[in-house]
Length: 144
Image: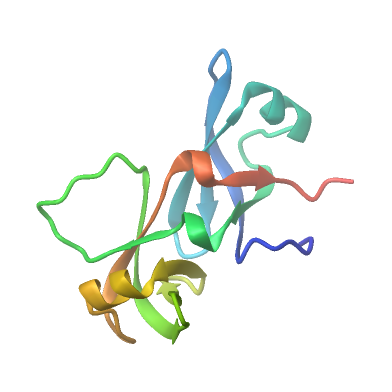
């Protein structure tokens, strides 16, 4: 994997591609049996040589990850809603870094305000949902 400033770097395999005139929807199966949905331009799909079964990775900035508390009555438009457990909370002066352990070993890191940390009463061991819009995911390959 390349070095980037994106805190979240998840490897996987392309499971499906829904081609559009301008944008494509890429389904990426990641470790632990979870699936990410990413929206990329059709040109990017071609340039990266994305095909079903190809290895790829997802880059997600920590500031693009929203943390929610599971509630069966809440419905969201965000396609990526990954359940996990808070594994670490690091409070700063204004913001907090929240690490979420997903099934299968992946960790998703989110940067949220201290106000949100307090409002949700987030703590280690708590079950949460990491929410990521498909348009906030960068897809890449490690082809030369």
